[in-house]
Length: 461
Image (cartoon, rainbow, N blue to C red; front, top):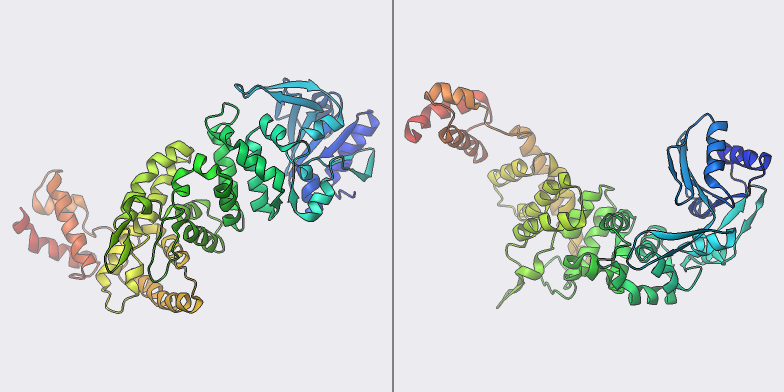
């Protein structure tokens, strides 16, 4: 195998000159065969990996970034590459502990403990033309199949997170999970529920990588089919079987949600916008009502859905600084749709623009993605109307200078004109000015706002 990387060739020279039995293993080999670029390089050493890592770092005028003596691993960074060294070992876990029992071993034992056959490939520094494939990983790579090197239940018993990794690889690489392996996932999914080996951070990291894939519905659907979704994200699992019948949506909210997520993933890599698409109908099961003559309704699901997010963010350990953004998009996701009506007022548009603020473009992207139907002509007709709506929204926003909107007359001047101290009344007056602008009663400029203030101040005070 021709690595075409100077850094790997340099590491190989160091290994050969100093008589180390070392190999490039795992994901780097897999990605190279798939034509995927990778900056993470894993080196397996039959012997002392830390000692070899120290020698390599010194030879390359670098230094080790981390050393984990208990695991026999070390890493350093060279240019844009992260290079990790690991001692060949066996691992086993006790069910009540995250800490593995580690025994130094040989190449085959180390490869056998890996998650999937496609990650159990190795190339020796001393024989780079030969790919060591003890578990038929090359065949599985060619067939686009995910299979464990050992019995799947044994592999997942050692680290239950591997079940999520299987679904993540299936989604990211567009692979299929082998039947016995998927059966084991369905059987052992309970290990992901409050298991001391698997932290919430690791679960969430895998989930977000699934959501980051080019077609997230593939992984999300596997999470649902395996039963894992019910464990790690019950709010999404609960969407299945919830009927909805209207002009632009499918009957099942779960299937509709998957389509919305795929739609938006074609337009953006913003993971939090994708998460907003995933969660936009999260409250539909709780708000579902049947109205005679209208069918199923979900009144208020956007507001209740936004209120559910704090609990979800806390449980999933999503970054809290993204909570407000996702809340806003879910709370507002229905607002642009009625603007497609011909009789919509500029006032309604101004209020949407102000409420959405700097996230207006993302909100409109979400609304576009939310249009799903089995009738392509119906979708196209609506999207054409939405093009006009979007153009009008931006025109009104620009014309009325609504970016970072607030009263042109500031609080200090209101206090001076009205002879007020800092108080609730200042806020009330300021709000009155803003409402007048949004309603189109006055232009959004200082002179008009000041004149309006002088007209209303006595009535308010």
